[in-house]
Amino acid sequence: MLTTWIIFFGYGSLALGTPIPPTLQSPLRPASVPSYVLDYAPLVYLHSEDPYRPADIGSQVQNTRPEVDYTFIPGQYDLNNLDQLNLFGELYLTSKVDIITNPGWLKGVTPNSCGTTESAVTCAVITTDHGNGLVDAFYMYFYAYNWGGLVAQISSWNVGNHVGDWEHNMIRFQNGVPIAVWFSQHNNGQAFDYKALQKCGDRPIVYSANGSHANYAISGEHEHTIPNLNLPINGILMDFTDDGPLWDPITSAYFYSFDISTSTFTEYNSSYPTAWLNFLGHWGDKQYPDSDPREASNIFAGIEARYSDGPTGPIDKQLHRANVCPDNGNPCLIRETLTA
Ligand SMILES: *[C@@H]1O[C@H](CO)[C@@H](O)[C@H](O)[C@H]1NC(C)=O
Ligand SMILES: *[C@@H]1O[C@H](CO)[C@@H](O)[C@H](O)[C@H]1NC(C)=O
Image (cartoon, rainbow, N blue to C red; front, side):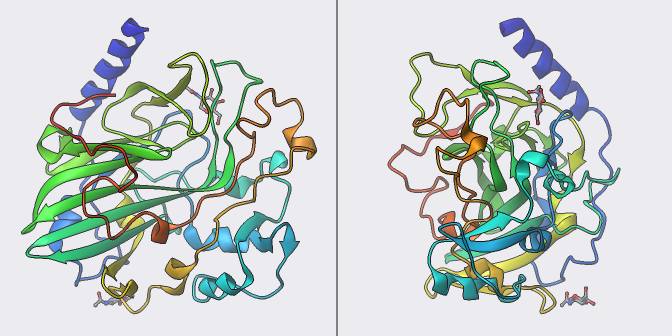
């Protein structure tokens, strides 16, 4: 295992020597966004074997239908009025077709050779200004599907899949200088000192794990524990990262600011849809009942579903957070060296 890790790590480091194309000036990129939010924006290596690439945020609404407690809510919804669904209760954007058939839209869009997901807006950048020169920039990454991985690498032991997947990095800036970076991973994540990270120029390098899209600072294998799944054997749940296609999220993004005191989002360009950011519901199906055939032969039934709830959106990621880490009772360790 250690040997494999070293090979993976060596491979990732080598890749940093290869040239990365300069960031394209996206037509979506508005002039008013602070330049440091763009200059220090993360670059993300997707996993070479991951079929589930970043996906268009608006298309998720078109490929799903709103449901509350498995009951369809009729109406026409898109990114400009999605928040109206909050009235109906705990909302789930539920796939129109059975996801067991693996419909093509779950796979999103592979970035082109310049790192852009063409004709798909796959990222939302949200800035929060804490005053006194302290600004957080959240880079919210959207994928249409999360493949949960295998327990102990046993192929029938696949759990934790869900429709919709929001992950993020957050960079904390002091007077336009990057200080620290948060990497979301499953229910929590890791924070690093900006100086510790691998970079292309000034831009931090991020690795998105195969299927789960958890964000890591290095390539290789990552032991993790799925939240609420307590297994007696440590390290049996793994994430894998490598330097597959390079994604430059800010070239396919909408940009917003979030006012902490009023909890309001403001678009940096009036052409961006904004109402969707106030949507409190889930971006995928509700966990199916244990009696559902899709949950059959899941030996972890009652512990971890094969198909769990779709995630809530950016508004639920503690945009107002005081520390680099979200406030969840865990200590906020700012790592000074690279680690899995
Ligand atoms: C807003 O976006 C439109 C369309 O992409 C663009 O023409 C315009 O220049 C942008 N405005 C600003 C202030 O960036
Ligand atoms: C990546 O995920 C796919 C399923 O989406 C799986 O078939 C493949 O084995 C995974 N690769 C690694 C290295 O985990």
